[in-house]
Length: 60
Image 1 (tube, rainbow, N blue to C red):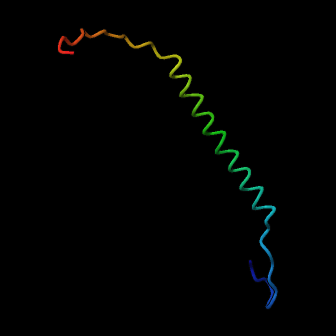
Image 2 (image 1 turned 180 degrees about the vertical axis):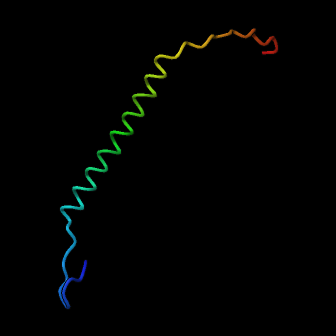
Image 3 (image 1 turned 135 degrees about the horizontal axis):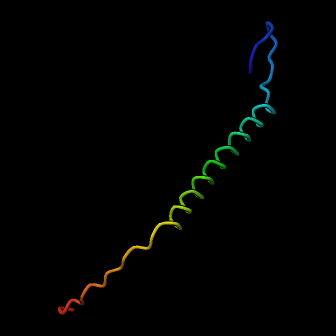
């Protein structure tokens, strides 16, 4: 709340606050989705690791 005139209380602009929060939340989600897609692309395009079979342990 803010006070403009003596004894007069005005309410916060909840519509403006909601719009700002919605826009920034949407922006954050898009950034996270882009980061996930970039990481998935890095994973898909990376070479397969060379697998090496180890000899069996004779004690088992």
